Length: 119
Image (cartoon, rainbow, N blue to C red; front, side, top):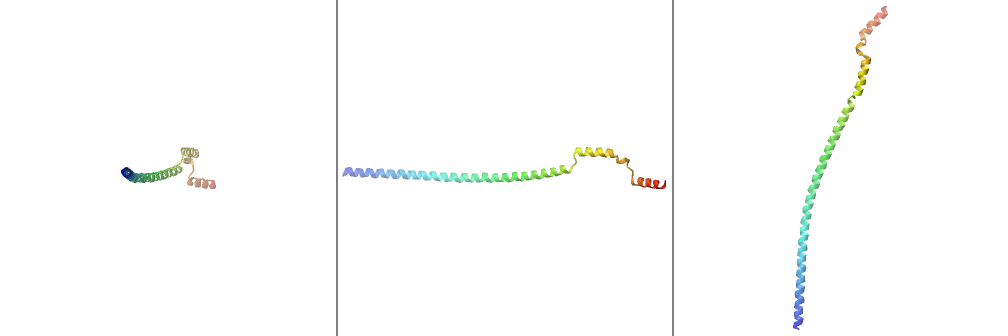
């Protein structure tokens, strides 16, 4: 019977060691899970900050693009409103051919009509 009691004590000791090992493993797993949770919270905060910063950058870029579009539109309208060099050259040639300084004034025309009626 002593041998069976020793065997029973050894089994109890062995089982209590297993329970302690399991409790230790459970504690280690719990600590790891808590650490992972803290890391996830930290990473989430960092990602949210970076996302917010990226959104602000995108908004600034959108504003810059809109301003650039407006500037280009205004410049395009101004360019369309201006005469081209070729157009100016043609007008200068036409003005030289027409030579407005040699044209008769209204008074000259009336005088010429009056002279032609008299004569």
